[in-house]
Image (cartoon, rainbow, N blue to C red; front, side, top):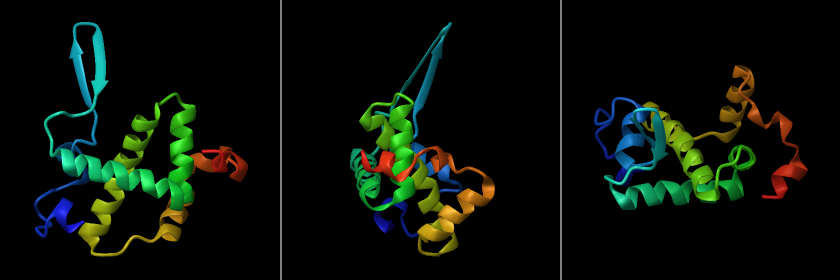
Length: 132
């Protein structure tokens, strides 16, 4: 995290800044009636790849991350886009941990999802999640 975020906590005032800088945030372009979305080309490639790989590996060890990935795939995203969407989510979580100077707590995060009613995973049972 220190390599990605740095030691100056005021460098990024919010999570979207690191998401845009690292290249994980999508770029939306509009011209006339056309709209297209692509990932950022002008960014530190190693940082983008690091977050992408981190998110990909989290699918193996974190149930909510696996469920998020499966949900993205069911919605029609290709595998790299689904992992990039997961990395986008992870960056918000990691930024908050970095700002608050607390380690990530999976149980606390899952409980907060349930409290907020954002549990997109209730439609996915364990059998579905294991088929990734």
